[in-house]
Image (tube, rainbow, N blue to C red):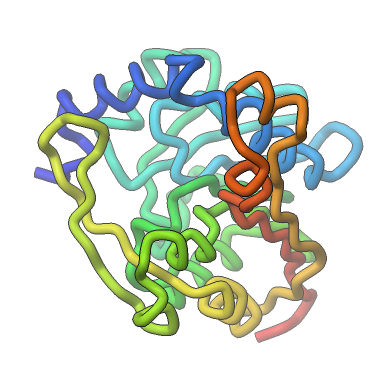
Length: 233
């Protein structure tokens, strides 16, 4: 069984994301950074890829027609349960979209790519799922954190590790990709890089969460904005 469909993992994931003390960085720092990259105006078709239980998908509902997709059927079922007003479907990002799903103006993927080994196939699949001039927003754990964890010796290599989700005792494969690996995978599949954000924690938030400046100024996320090039093969 796909580890991401394990009911224990899903319940632990939902509980952790609902805990303000555990998830404040995403809510107060990273998600605002991602939302700042969204195109202005309404009537957009937006996909949250790697949607998990649907929390971010629900926050995007003001943009236009929003759908969520995840490779885990269990996560998709939980998202449908949490947000029955939103359309969710199972998709791995590399295969063709289901025939009933129309291409999107914008695809957002948050904290999913580090669990995907083959960025090349994913980049191709996401490009195919976008309209001409479509936009892709990628948010990943910042590769610079490898330096603080002592993994820089293998920084340029795709390194796999078994990572426990919360305290569930359930382990999944997580891959260490470099900044260039993230960017080049999409440049080779019809995208141009338009913006790079490395959201850091404001001094006010550092104080409220009792952090020192060194920890607060170290970027925890790398947020990339790409645009699909028309007629690029």
